[in-house]
Length: 384
Image 1 (cartoon, rainbow, N blue to C red):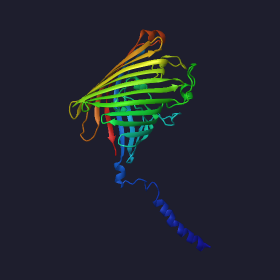
Image 2 (spheres, rainbow, N blue to C red; image 1 turned 135 degrees about the vertical axis):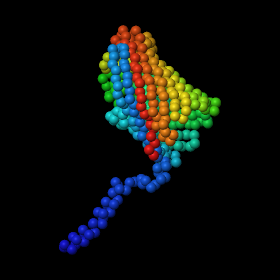
Image 3 (cartoon, one colour; image 1 turned 90 degrees about the horizontal axis):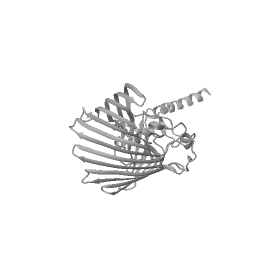
Image 4 (cartoon, one colour; image 1 turned 120 degrees about the vertical axis):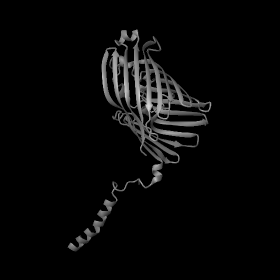
């Protein structure tokens, strides 16, 4: 009997050794020796870290501050899974990590979609992605925007849905999307709102159409979009963007016009003035955004961003002007390395929020300004 046990043990020992040798920690599914796989995958780490000093004055706000801040920190992975299938993923670490009740992803996962190439002119997208909105402010990664204008500072930029793009002509592309209009379920967002006309829709959907044009050998471009979202039953947002860009040699000039009529205030600027459990309706936001860029040399680049944003309440009836905000952001980039896109920057951010007499009388608010200086580093680091 002992001889039988001994034989069984001797037979099992090599099997145990084999399982250790084939352990997944020691033998990854993707081998580093397979260079073809890594040629089609891009991994990057984006960061913007800055030292900032700021002051608030007016409107009951009177304080100063100095601090370091991680303005943007994200891991991005993209690649080609097949000759007709691409994927794109981005996780922003300094964003909300709570899983949203509607799309079942947290807000720190900004991109998680695949692109299917049907032919040389037609592409399909599905997953969590950016909306196909027009304009050039929105087209920049948040890595490169020190401060957005009011609409995009408060907009839901990354949502789940499907879309397509069609390159109709060499210089003209059309895109269309069907998206969720929000990431939270109705009861999580509007459950306690006191309003008779706020009801849950069958589908909180957002439809986006987009046109991109190029003229004069690419020196002048247009980027327009129109969208209609259904936020609650029979009420939503009409959003129009007209973007324009001129570029010639070392100079670029971009100008966006934004018009957002919101039957339910989704940006929250007017809504923040109301009492708890109330919501602003028939709100209008009108914006202008301009950015100029000039490449002085291989190492130095100058930027100037100017913006305004005007908010109205009860636009269908009394058209109550609430406030107008102004912004100016001059910035200087310095690139010390030729083969690495690492930029040192210095910037000033000046914002002024001008509340009208109507807003002051009805909501007990006052105008204020914010002045800020930032010095930092900006780097889209390509790891693979």
